[in-house]
Length: 154
Image 1 (cartoon, one colour):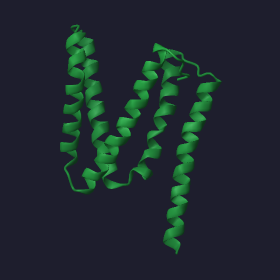
Image 2: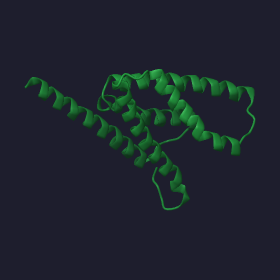
Image 3: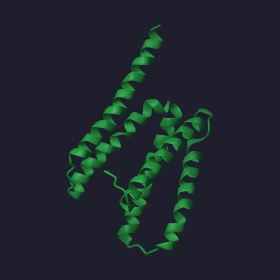
Image 4: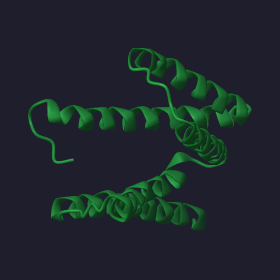
């Protein structure tokens, strides 16, 4: 992100808060899954909440969409719903510490897709960020796995 002081840091702050919110949401998804709540109900409430939060912006900035845009919106919605259903089931079945390491693959996908479709080449600060984020996730996963192995061998 390379934030600076000023309005250019607002998207970075929004991303940070979004990540914080996602972490809290998935911690609660885990609790609900352990309690035996239906994953489809969890996804329905998640989608309804998101829709309610975005409605004011939609109403303020409404513009009609073309048929192609509607098609892409429907396909995106189907992909998002499928992903949300499966990630909700995953968090209900296993602790977040075992699953969340795979969420960091998003960083790699964003970099690769940004290059392929937008021609974005990451600078050295971005590459350093990728290494720090993914390295930290993998190191944490490794240490937790090792700790579990040591406990089970005792």
